Image (tube, rainbow over all chains, first blue to last red; front, side, top):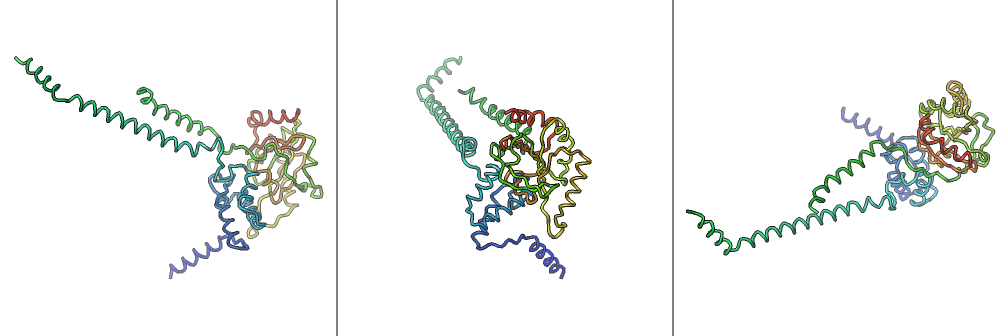
Amino acid sequence: MKTIILAICLFSAALLAQEVLPFADDQQRQLYQELTAELRCPQCQNQNIADSNAIVAVDMRQKTYELVQQGKSRQQVLDYMINRYGDFVHYQPPVNRFTVWLWLLPALMLLGLLIVGLLRRRQQTKIEATASMQLNETELDQLIDRYRSKKP
Amino acid sequence: MRKVMFYLPLALFLALALFLLSGLFSDPRERDSASLNKPLPEFALADLMQPEKIWTPAELKGETFLLNVWGTWCPTCNAELGYLTELRAQGVKIVGLYYELPRDPAFDAPFNLATLQAEVQQKLEQQGNPYQFNMLDLTRSVSLDLGVSGAPETFIIDRSGIVRAHHIGDINPQVWRSKLAPLYQEWLNK
């Protein structure tokens, strides 16, 4: 019995907490959800506007909703926001000369690691090769002879 | 070559440590504003105290001024009122953009202009009145167009109505002297 009451309380609260926004079709609803997940709140900096309840995030959600309702495309809504809040507001930054390092640096590090690994391996095999070359038989014999001759 | 390889990890570590150290002293709120060097967005806002008066960007042209986004609900804005009043006494023209909070129909009383006016009047009498006048941004749409992320924020608008500076956060003597005053002087004299 208790669990049933608890379940009713929990689920009804969850239902009430949902914002109900009417959309013309599922495509628009999906676009709205994508956009609010991708746009970043300028006030609470590590939240998207779907998660944040800052005033500016509420306003941006409202504006996104309006623009989607007007039939604006995904790029048009993004441009609208970027025009006002800068590239900062979109979680997928554009590639330019400052941000290109985000993609280049990991590749460069991998390349560097590969080169260092190859160099080390080559050095290792060289040492092994010279070591085995030194151990030919005549040299060994000479060594033994020398050793013996020193003995009284 | 061996020596270089020996010191390379240390050099990389130092470079990373320096980069992270500089991050400790940088302000994450400091970022390039998208509204810089653009004209004021189109608007028609009512004067807060005389709602029959409508302000448009065209009417704000002719003089360099500070546009200060504020609200009586915002403690930081109230704290800077005193210093802004000093600036007004020094001859700086300051216009207020009143940033009204959204209302939850389930909990909040509906918007009432007379109540807000009384509240603002009282606050400005207590803390000092730096404003030539206030424009009421009831739906915060002009603030959204300006790229305002909260209150307080301050813009420097030049005489031809173009945004020349955007400061997020309060104005105190240090911020004014080091950041805003030079820009204000520069655009005042142009």
